[in-house]
Length: 75
Image 1 (cartoon, rainbow, N blue to C red):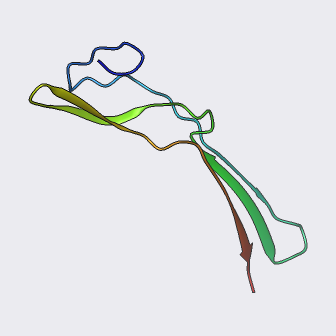
Image 2 (cartoon, rainbow, N blue to C red):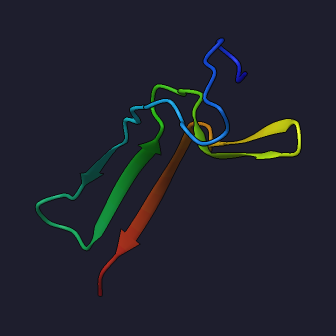
């Protein structure tokens, strides 16, 4: 039994939805850009795989929310 009470018998994983986003700002005159991005924006708990070893079920969780940024420059 996984957290949340769903019995998946070691091979059926529950469905999940992940939301990601990115935005880039580039001035009309200027050689630079600034970007921000996020993965798993809603910070959902989900499992990417699971299995069973003898009598123990194991679940590998997905990554949590991640937010980052980039700065670019063209010359």
